[in-house]
Structure formats: structure tokens, C-alpha cells
Amino acid sequence: MSEPTKRTAIFPGTFDPFTIGHANIVMRTLNLFDEVVIAIGFNLNKRTFFTVEQRVRMIKKYYDKDKRVRVEAYDLLTVDFAMEIKADYIIRGIRTVADMEYERTISDINLKISGIDTLLFFTLPELTSVSSSICRELLRFGKDISMMLPESFELEERE
Image (tube, rainbow, N blue to C red):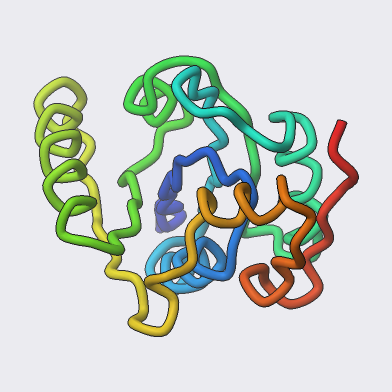
């Protein structure tokens, strides 16, 4: 009898910083897959607060006891990285109608060029106002964002 195939999903994003919304998507994804790869991409269009290396370290530390979660940085097309790590699906979170339209277009293209489908998770209603962009803005002005971070998630000092 052969071993069951391990099912892997990639959850790509900037994660600057990683929020309770992101953690919720990871938790829900782990209900469906054996492994989730949190893939931190380099986005030249975003002005980030934390370095890629810091984001990798912070998220790895948060999930250090859950061997089903891997954290990796990449600097190529998300779909190419998904193929490289042999992901079965790409996971994306949807907060707004605008997110839906954007993600639909990207998922259509990704499917055409790779055969990898995208699963969309709708953000829980109580989390729709949480975004990394808002967190970055608040951090730049020295505000506390702990209510938007997963419990026990530790931010590093900005480099």
C-alpha cells in the first residue's frame, strides 16, 4: 500500500506585518492541507516596514511548534515558486470586492500557466478592517497594533 500524498498549499504575501487575519487564514488552511508554506514575496511596489529577513524570523518563531507550517522568502513569480515547491494550491484571503476582482484575474492567469488552482478564503467579518497597510501606518506613528496581531506574536525592532 502506498503512502498517502502530502497536500501542500502556499499562502503568499508580503506579511508586513503578519496579522490576526493572516493567522486565521493559515489556521483554516491547515484544516484542509497537510502543510502550509507561508511564502513571503519581495514586492518592489510596497514600502515595507520590516525587512524580509525579519518577517521570516518573526513568523517562523510564531509557528515554531507547528511542523505543518513552513516559512520561506522568494523573489520570483508566485506561481513559479508554487511550482518549485510542488504546491497543490495557492491560498489567498479576500477582504473586499476589490480584492475579489484582483485575485480572480491573478488566479485565472496562474491556472492557465501552471495548472495550479487558487482557493479563496473570505475574511471573517470581525477581521475585515485589519490590514498590514493600516498596521504599517500605525507603526510609523508609534502606535500600538497588538490588537491586530496574533496572540503571542512578537514584533522585532525595526532595522
